[in-house]
Amino acid sequence: MRVVTAAFAIAAGAIVLLGYFFPDQLGSLRLLLLDWAVIIAGMAVLVGIYNLAAVQMEKIRAGQKGGVYGILLVISLLITFGLGLILGPENEYMQLAMNAIVVPVEASLMAILAVTLIYASIRLLRRRVDVMSVVFLVVAVLFLILIMPTPFGPILGDRVTQAAIDFLGMFSGGGARGLLIGIALGTLLTGLRVLFGVDRPYGGN
Amino acid sequence: MLALGLLALTAILLVGLTLLRRRSPASLRLIEAYQRLNRSVGLAVENGTRLHISLGRGNFISARGGSALAGLAMLRRLAERTSLSDRPPIVTSGDASLAILSQDTLQSGYRAAGAEDQYRFTTGRLAGLTPFSYAAGTLSTIHDENVSANIVIGDLGTESGLLAEAADREDTSLIAASDDLSAQSVFFASAQEPLIGEELFAAGAYVGAGASHEASLHVEDILRWLIILAILLGSLLKIVGAPI
Image (cartoon, rainbow over all chains, first blue to last red):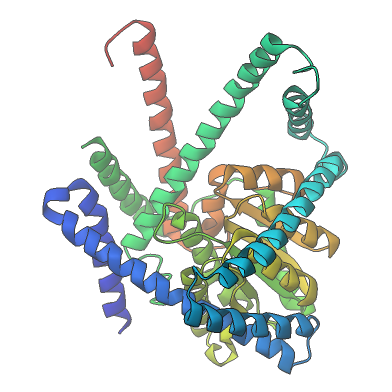
């Protein structure tokens, strides 16, 4: 069975990859396989939500810390899921649940994140004193000063600010491209290992 | 045609160097974060605490799936090494497909270690489906599950700052890497030893996942040099005004 799974996975991966290079011959098959993948990913969300509920139920059953939040989560999940099925996601009450609960909660987390990041930056030199940490902090502070809105416009004037941003952007843009090239190479090699069946994240190992 | 040629060259190099590495294992440069990871795994097994592995929100239908696959390769090896621990590792993800694959990978690791009966499907968890719900779901694991080390490897955004802060507050180790530039800057500011850029993809090689992972690092080096040469050549041609 494991061999069959691996054979299917490798064949599907190879067809999708080669479909990019030979669109006339394999393009339609590639799109068909991607459509199947999207449908399977949609079903996976349902399985994932079942897993989420099961983890919370286990917490409640075992009387673990945070079990109360688990009860809240499961009840909210059941109500939202049930109402979503009956009323549809476009219904005004479903929209209200999204706009009045989910969006404000995520916005609050983002606000906490802003404070957290400032705090982490302040503590950076206590955690690690090296040249790169100092450069990181100096550039971050400099950049924040440059883009800081004031009633009188940019602190250093329009031309100096733009020149400084361009100068800093040259280094950060170059560095970012270098990192992205490295990540692209890593992704390519990881994909090839899966394609060759060396790594089998689908349980075939 | 160039892309296909590059792909073929990469595949040939990967196969060739994997065969070579099977005969003579590579000596890898020291990466402090991976040393800490290996130490943390040993410590977690010895003192009965948990490892928490977070694989991010990498979606396999998008280009971000690569980091998730790298995380799964590392997870496979870590599951094998920690399967006999009193407290098995917990894996959190922000994508449903990734959560299912993490369960499958955990089970494979347990099976390989001869401890499949120890496997529980609730140790591979979907923490949330949006960036902040994933972070919120993962925070409770960091705070409440007797975790001694957090390994966060995958596709994450700035929400990773919340995970780093929680790990710091619990006084636990944090080994973190992401394919996202904003998350990398967050980890640079908040992790003890941040992993930058393609170091994320070296995880497998440093946890002993096999010759192919070591060979991948060498192929990456070769391709990087080729790209550097191509950039330099392109710049030179541009300077002399050659049509490119």
